[in-house]
Length: 476
Image (cartoon, helix red, strand yellow):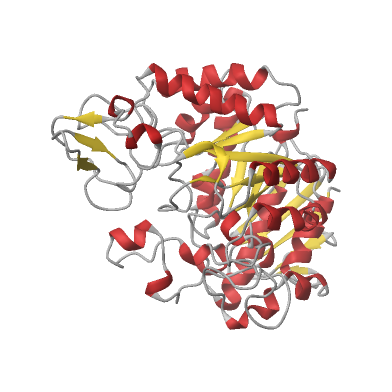
């Protein structure tokens, strides 16, 4: 079975993982120095958010050079060292690729090669996902499209030069030895002809990914790609992972699901059915660099922590592949009280502060110590809460009941599973079997007697399954 079908993949947001040179910004050498944490955690691979040359208007998702490392993160030699060390530890490496748009600092845009971008004589009514109109006027009077920030002009994938360039970008990183790609805004590359149509998920994207699949398959070692596809149905998402296209797609329905047993079961069933129809593995995720952290999303305080731990054990018990966002394994909460003057997210800036944006889930990780910057480096680009001492890797490693040790135990016990069978359960409880495990998650208000002793529990149990708790049991 291909490795990616059952892999647990850990997302690294480079600016906030670990800082080796003391400038307050995470970098590639910092990641390399901390790879043992990921190997000890038990994940199969890491996915690196963008580290390419960029003005950093959108945290590196505004790329000026797809084949070089931004100096703030290091050098290509630093990337090669990271890749070599990761492979030595048995970790595969996935890198982000951003094909929907470039930075306005990209040589194509700077040099006026505007035929490689989406333009119009007059703007239609499309709005930016970051707020405001999605069109900005050029000096020649025409308008260019930016579905995100004006510093991120959308590429014109009808232009052959764009297609050829991205083929070369894929080859560049595959030759260096990367194991795969996460495709940013994978459903956005091809734009519709009429203003009234949905701007995303156009038919033409599939031709592009069929071409990319041939490139991936031409390299040894089971190279893969995972698609970011949002605001559409599981059946539509499944088209991106047909046998001749990409390998995985993120499950945003599961990520955004409320703490409700009926809705979660509906999403799980729909996800499994859509993936099975095309022979792809389902994926599961409860957090990433764009979403509020689950501890806060599920209620903050004790209820939020219990539910986040229960959600993690539910996710890791499901068949398929799972994604963990850095700091999730530490149970970090969202930082909601960052000062306005340190926030950098375009969502916050373009909304005039009406939306807090995503900086709160991107605060640098706490590694050790009793005070900020908690071993991240000499300082940190976003301030860490002073009370994060209990969340550090060092503090949690020594605590058998910590969230870190819950994740370590789950990944040690987790085994590849291909099937899921629902079992009868009381109201509010989800209960299913895989090939090896019986998983029960109590999303209700009452405790229930367990049929047998669990091998792992998200919260303490004493013969009963309390609310907001998930347990793993051996199959009877």
